[in-house]
Amino acid sequence: TEIPLSEKNIILIGFMGAGKTTIGQLLANKLDRPFLDADQEIEQKYGMPVTEIFKCMGEPAFRQIEKDYLTKLCHNSRSKVVSLGGGSFMQDEIRQACLSSGIVYHLDLQWEEWLKRFEALIGTRPLLQSKSLEEIEELFNSRKIVYADNHYTIAVDAQNPEQIAEAMAQQIR
Ligand code: S3P
Image (cartoon, rainbow, N blue to C red; front, side, top):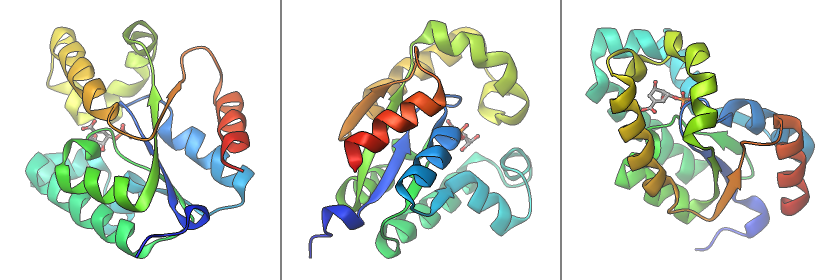
């Protein structure tokens, strides 16, 4: 059975550092909906940061945890704002669960803008630590193609998180 539009989860996707968590939290406040950050939920459940999960259990284990958590969430949750980790949408099952049960927003930024944020991200993003800048740019470009397969794309380069959340809220209300 189809979920009514007003009860669908609003799901934010995009590359690391696009602002999914910050914008998601602001948007949830504006819409008066509960907010969930997938990585934060997983960190709480496992009692360690994502970097530690990568280190102790490996990336494949993290991907499995991510898949279990998000497919369940899509099945059980209504009317929430949910920020995904940057890699979640690369998994078919997650992508399909999100697209069929929620409304997906891609927070899209240009590589030049992302480069300005790189330094601030590297400490907490295991995927960036093992790669050269060239490899990161390749990952950025290949993921953008997958992120584009969604409902809406929001350019986040020029505006601050508050302005972006406000524009999104007006579109959704
Ligand atoms: C990842 C992004 C991270 C986190 C993990 C892997 C990725 O989330 O899930 O480090 O594969 O892009 P953010 O997008 O919130 O940084």
